[in-house]
Image (cartoon, rainbow, N blue to C red; front, side):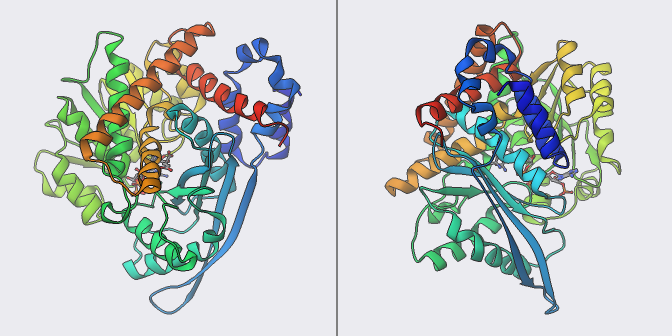
Amino acid sequence: MLLEEVLHDIKEKDAEQKEFIQAVEEVFGSLEVLDKRHPEYAKNGIYQRIIEPERIIIFRIPWLDDKGEVQVNRGYRVQFNSALGPYKGGLRFHESVNLGIIKFLAFEQIFKNALTGLMMGGAKGGSDFNPKGKSDNEIMRFCQSFMSELYRHIGPHLDIPAGDIGVGAREIGYLFGQYKRLQNEFSGALTGKGINYGGSLVRKEATGYGLIYFMERYLQDYNLSLKDKKIIISGSGNVALYALQKASSMGAKVIAMSDSDGYIYDENGIDFDTIRTIKEIDRKRIKEYANTVNSALYHPVTKDIWKIKCDIALPCATQNEIDADGAKALLANGVIAVGEGANMPCNKEAVSIFMENGILYAPGKASNAGGVAVSGLEMSQDAIFKPSSFDEVDSQLKKIMENIYENIKVRAQEYGKDGDLLAGANIEGFIKVADAMLAQGIV
Ligand code: NDP
Ligand code: 2IT
């Protein structure tokens, strides 16, 4: 079946899954040139097969809140593609979660994981559970109930979940404890674990650090660097915090960050230790930063962050957070580069605006691959029961990010799309997965 026919079909079949359709359109939008050179993909039904998840698990998560009342949430695991390795991808706990969002994330994950060069297929999961305002005990009971169903579908050679929005070290700990108890086995069926029980050093920092390593290498090709650049980072969670830390250590100044309530602005640069304590340790709102630091201002509209003048924008919160208005505002203020720490944070119009105006644009499936790459290293460490040092993992992460950049740059050139990293990433990731699928027959 032809590329456009497959796209037309999925738009009808999964019409209500708008984020998933958006992600498929984005990948397929880069494949026309590939299709011409590789008719075997259409002939062997690769386009039809690659957009159909191998398996979707949807389940009930009943749990008791602190008042003793019964709560019920919905759980998901989309095991999308296992051509390159066991299913791998994070879990998202956020009230907005639905099947379309998990499918878009799992679909992106297939190609992202392929770009890392490690043995990982693509998956994603999560729940519409809202962790905000819940006690530690409620979080634990929820995680235990979630795992009471999920444990039968995962394993170190089958499917290895990790964190994403709303799932960090605390949640992975509770999920792992319940997995180990039900499975009666200590194995690396989750990544992002604590360092003293099979976790990898640098996993916590990996997505943010990886994004900065990627951007520095990208800028280098244009005789630029992060040093002395003014940066805006949206979000203030795991990815955003460690992007801030690494960018600051390289001489950049991060002048604004956000959460879903608003943003903070500090022309002196946001202090990593202060904001990490507020967000990661105390789990407070970002507004606290402006109450703590005299030079900082708080503005209660998250989206307005893109109206601040900066050199580089790093969206690290959520999907579709930069639309055409945000992109135009950044452009008018002279932005030179945009690097995606989040998954699909720039919508289609925003990406077109950046590309048409010569803004350096780093697509998330390449620039935020550092997190899952170190998850892959954690899987190797667990398999041989031997941890690596911080410096060893950090230098491997840097090398992986630089390799991803080189590979997608060269692929883009090879297909007549010089400088288009989105096309390079989509084509490079797709070829790896499609060729493995071809070799494995019609399955
Ligand atoms: P966290 O839960 O640690 O942080 C999420 C941050 O984004 C918070 O500041 C949150 O604000 C904000 N945010 C979330 N949803 C919205 C929303 N709908 N509107 C505005 N702000 C929002 O998640 P991560 O840092 O782990 O993930 C951030 C992004 O990075 C996601 O797109 C994720 O898929 C992607 N990613 C994560 C990786 C990882 O290893 N963790 C790896 C690669 C990509 P608030 O607290 O107010 O909700
Ligand atoms: O989007 C992502 O790449 C993640 N949330 C990390 C996945 C993982 O398995 O480490």
